[in-house]
Image 1 (cartoon, rainbow, N blue to C red):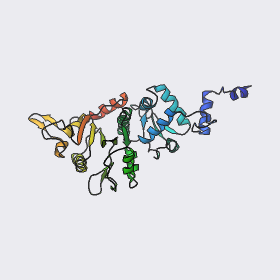
Image 2: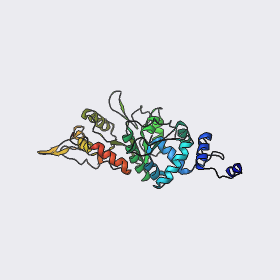
Image 3: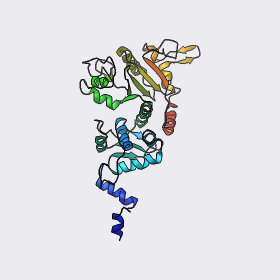
Image 4: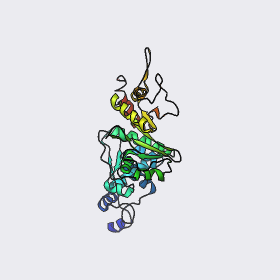
Length: 302
């Protein structure tokens, strides 16, 4: 009798979960123990492209903000061997990233990301910014996608041409299109690239911590030399470091002025300039709180 009930589909949750772990089905055919949805596939793509997402970010991007729906689907995909999930970092809550199998199912052409480590905060902040840009209809290339495109000669130019970006030079060297050269041999990889069909493309840098002044000046000068537009989204200490600040005897210039991208004695960059600087705003409340706490350590330093 008990066997017949199980065959009729009355398995307990634990039994179904164990079957998913044992079968490791990808949700594409009968017998996998679950069925993969479009939202599931979107999460696999996003988690592969952005490396790591919080449960809050996954819910907002894939399930209309429904946390419990995201929690259930993440659990199914973790049991099927497509996602890793961890709740070891208290402020972040549950975070997810794809396994190698999950990355293959995602079909982005990227391998599985490395597990999140000490750069988890920056990784999640990048995802927050990129997901919001995509939600607003913009085309975003993550650093992983930029590196992949630049790894093979001509791929970056082909990608931009497919995105209807005008004026893409042919025969560019590695680091001359999506990335920028910051010296004879050094290549600087932007955090994100925004492609603007019919208009062009530009870099987005998400900065949580002020860089050494010489390093930041070198990067900004590289953007200037390349004639590349760049938007810096930073915490308060970073914004002050780039734009400068008001001192007791007048305006104290920042690295943006030193690099020739901002006018001396002013905070606001010209509207048509290569450099734009804005405060970093994040949608995930737990992430935003942690970034604020992180930035408070550097307020006096700048």
